[in-house]
Length: 324
Ligand code: F6R
Image (tube, rainbow, N blue to C red; front, side):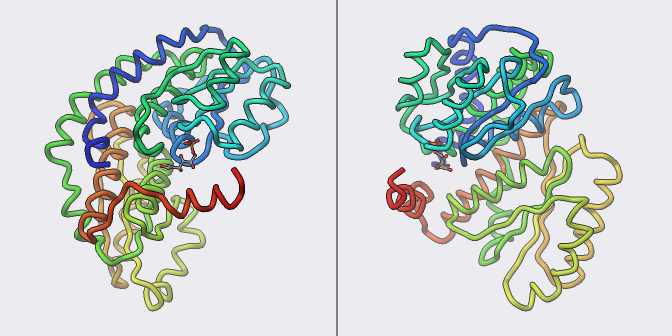
């Protein structure tokens, strides 16, 4: 797992090449892009939307489940992302998109998704096999970003994507992840994000779940200032909660202020608080740097507890019980 995370800078060029090789047609679609997937394969959709931010000229949505929104039709590009290619929810969306007459793209290592896409003559962007699906986050995010550019959601962000490589190389050398992990040791982290960092907070949460084998939660501001903040004092009596705040230069100034003030309030009542700042000078770099830092923290936390981050027995056991 640590090798896959540290390889993220090198995956950038490979991911761009693989999507290009799929030969996805460029067209301007009023319905924009829908990314269908689950877990580690869905997150690329959210992260792409966060990186595009208010530059989006068409809608970009992630669908986690069996059904597509009713408005999806011939003017919406549907990207079906499944690392294994055998996730039942994503396969159901693949079929539903075909029935709705939507143009489709598959992003996968193979499995029934690649098979069905090839039979139907649909572009398949290949993802390298041999990783855990969640470790393919760079492939999933770049796949979604390139599809967004192909259907008119955003102008090409290729320069930004390529420009993030050097930054991630630096991050691999010096991320501060070990000290963040020590601050979070033996706690249940609540990862706070706002605006573009809300999706990244969810990525941190899922990486803490799957790699560190911890319960963890994601919280979004400003909403949490209107409810969740009320539960912290009693929460700290009941559980060893900690709070992480993901900052980015792309944050609205009032969201930045809310993050700072929320962190101060939680520290005052005894919560361990960690602030993490995005690095780089583009929205794509901000997103990828915070994602890689979170991935490194999750692996570091596993290491501190002598846990192997790789296997996900509970997830696999659940899929087997469901016959999925
Ligand atoms: C496992 C992981 C899971 C899977 C999810 C969907 O590493 O991250 O969240 O991504 O169960 O499976 P795939 O990605 O194969 O469609």
